[in-house]
Length: 572
Image 1: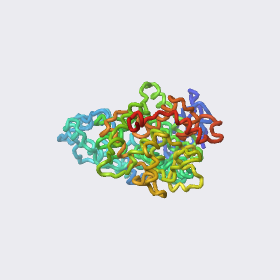
Image 2: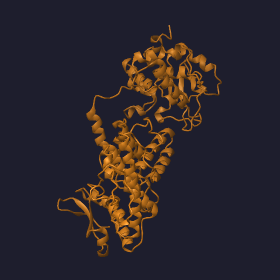
Image 3: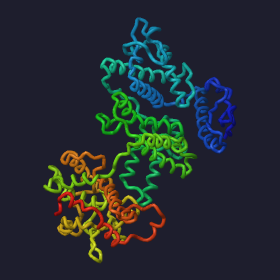
Image 4: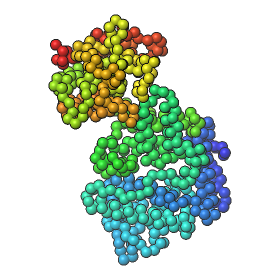
């Protein structure tokens, strides 16, 4: 491999002489790229990817020189579609649809109205057909060469079969773009759907490159990452991995299933910028269209975009997958980290300041919830029978800080009484017990949780005794495809708080209880190590990982916890 050399500024570059017979095709004597670093070790790592790019350019140039067509028919359509998608995205961002309208004249395309002006066309009617192949070639050539350059391909030679195929594909897309611009201009900005074009996909030589590196495209790396995470039992739930898969798929819709080795720092920055333009998924018309179309629609209609915190989360997920690829030796650096995009998003969030959303319920909000119809009037949803889950799960969450799914997946046998009469929940904490497909977030989530006396006074013990001993604590909650039991509960609890209770709180419907539990434990003087043991948090010191927290100590401290049911009038 050609070793990096220093340029006049002391920055490393990759430079290779173009073979003499290919100079006319490549268009230059030397092929070079700046490696953007003064560090020789970093330069050497970056040079490997650039060397592959150079070899690709030379190979394609050789194919063109030999008269062979190295791009297949799908590549031609993919290049035209990429050009169309990028041009439309820019137009939707500016609203200047008039720039792609041309005028029909006796001469088919006049010098005034049909010639490219700054890369665009100038008048106010849609593109018309032309009779001359030479006109088609002339009008499309700048756009063809610009896309070839963007995709690191040499320019085509006019008159070759490859150029004719590209000109025909680009002309068809140019006509579609002009027709679309005419429709949107005449509709006073009303959104008109774009025509169907080739979906985002890698070019044939990109697919070949991916095969050469043992198929390690981004999706292939994702599958290996998922397998590794599932092998670490309890480290990642199926739901978490499903969320990660959605983030990876969103990236693939934007950029294609690229070889992971071609994920550059520049691409990491482009990904960050596209995330900033991505709309929230709940907007009208958003579902059912791909990521590129979502951004175009959001630009056209000025839809709400995802928050910087969501952008940061998606970058972290991609960074985790790329870090795994680096550990496996498939890439030399993690471009999300190496480019600094994640740090810049974090700085943006920190600079914004003062906008941290409250995550816990207030005492007044909990009082409002516990005095609402579910608890005082036996309210039930009209079409769904959730049994007593809507009554007991919020109460258990308020007094234990347990997570929604931890409670939803409990069996009757998980409600126990210890020596001394202390009632408690065993959350997958019995080594002799089969988990039966149930999951917890981490090892520290396996725990025993004492029950507050208010729960017993409200009749929780009697409720447990009324159920078959071998069944679920909330038998109406079924396990979904993702392995969770609480999904049907969540679909009703959130809307109930808004539509029936009229609660206006930034706290998450069930997780707000978990945050509130921690807040009230601190307010009541319950030591950190105790309430961390109750909620299943691992704690901040090595010492806390030694030994275990006695159930008697947790129960004693829990007596200090506020009597929420008494405050809400459920107990006298």
